[in-house]
Image 1 (cartoon, helix red, strand yellow):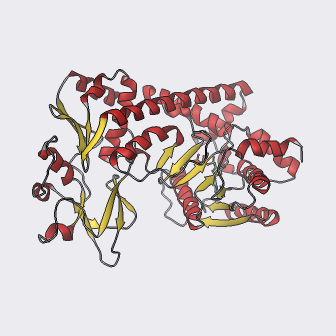
Image 2: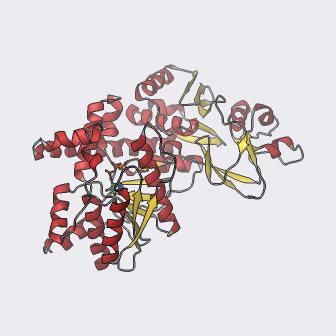
Image 3: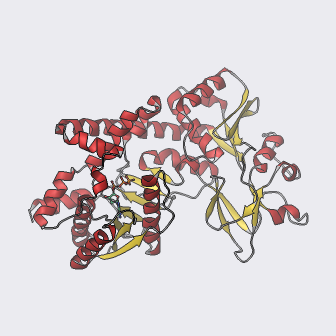
Amino acid sequence: MLDTEPDLSTRLFSHIDFTHGAVAAVSGGSDSTALLLLLKQHLDRAASSAKLLAVTIDHGLRQGSAAEAQAVAKLCAERGIAHRILRWSGRKPSTGLPAAAREARYNLLAEAARAEGIGLIVTGHTADDQAETVLMRHARGREPADMAGRGLAGMAPGTLYDWREWIVRPLLGMRRSTLRDFLRREHVGWADDPTNIDEVFERPRVRAALAGESAGHVENALRLAGQAAVERRQLGAGAADLIRRFASQPGTGLIRLDPALLTAGDDRAAIYALRILLATAGGVAFLPDQTRSEALFGRLKAGFLCATLSRTVVDFRRAGLFLRREARGLPPAATAVDNTIWDGRRHITLNDRADALLIAPLGATAARRLAIDDEETPASLMRAALAAEPASRQALENPGLPRGEPGSPAFVARPVVSPFSHFLPSFDLAPARAVAELIGASALPASPWGGHSAD
Ligand SMILES: Nc1ncnc2c1ncn2[C@@H]1O[C@H](COP(=O)(O)OP(=O)(O)OP(=O)(O)O)[C@@H](O)[C@H]1O
């Protein structure tokens, strides 16, 4: 081994907090195999008590995947690394297979981490993957105004999964060729996934195109991503600041924006804040379209209105600018499932698991019976927001039960920051934190970078 290699693993991992261990996602390809060996080297030297679990997902999608997983198991056994193979046993869709496989993979990795009390998953995404991602997004050119600030930032160094586990990508600044050189020196082989060169798919096409370009082409793409990431973080910090200064929550499900937001002076950040709040109030995973959000912002500047965007009613009147979930398209009454998200907005925790509990929107009739004692906010708005909150059917039908708030003692409905509750790229930490504080969502888990800021 070259003398420089301990420096390499220190450089890659020393800013990450491994106190609570790590799951290494190892497919058996060159990148994640190198990731595993470099991480093991680092932990042996710097954090020998930290738990390391390598996990390989066998998607069962091509011949040979089980053998590749076994090869990783063998390598791990030789190196004294705990390893698990997890199979994707769910239904395989006929369209959108790569996305479904990715979703299943992250879910299995997160479950494995949770089972071991580990809050950190590391993946082997490289600078080459980053360049491909940026070029693909560039080529698609969707929503140019938005992509300039967000999508072109590429993959974030970290992503919070389900508001719980951090997925960290320590190799994002490393070229694949460097990692392969490392493996060759270590005399460790790797598997080549044939789908990586199957040009039916977009990523392999971009990969092949990049292989024919000079190194400068990749560097340009990475520089572009770096600049876009800085812009995205700045925009997020600006939006977070505006949310803290101008947004409040007068009642459950109701967000009030001080109209001074419209003239605060930073329209880009205000529109970004508005988009995040619209998605949150509506329980939508994606931010509303940039162009429509800009148009809405322009109309708000012009005066009072009532409009709907992203399943959210935007009601601007003398008393203020209010956002709430529209009444249309709420989930029908259904048996509550513990630890699930209701309507994209509320995390449901059941207190009493013995009984089948029916949850339905509270509805306008029941909301009308609730006592509202808020002098500043129109009671009709408070009630309209409460009508879209989850309530147990039992509580609704039993007039003897106490009123005042929807819900029931049988479950807790905790707000979630909808656009970031499943995947929160570290670029967007600041606005996610500001919205979580605003709506009373759970606090974010500690950052994997400890005192360093790599987000
Ligand atoms: N079968 C697998 N088992 C475990 N980890 C995997 C598997 N496939 C991919 N990974 C992890 O994901 C990283 C990226 O892999 P790859 O680029 O093939 O996936 P991707 O579909 O682009 O993933 P992503 O959606 O996260 O970008 C790998 O370096 C590895 O850490």
